Image (cartoon, rainbow, N blue to C red):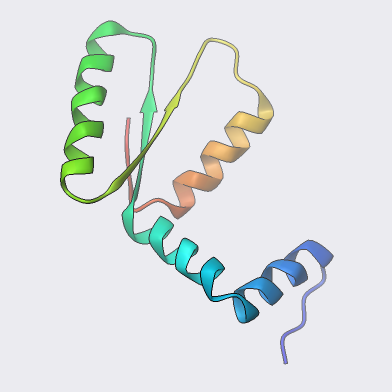
Length: 91
């Protein structure tokens, strides 16, 4: 038996236990996703673009996020979650 204090967590645990596709997606994310944090600086963009292409060649899944000067809280939280799940991060 599994118990949790939060309905959203309970729903997520239920999906993990009862949906093979969700487990497969999470396995793929944690083993293949490479988070690439991009900027608006031209020199950095050249390097990060090459890094994204190279990770694709290595059968990894690049996930690029381009930051602008104004950052929304939702974007920051999403990037934080992706960072915790990703195999590694390129900044």
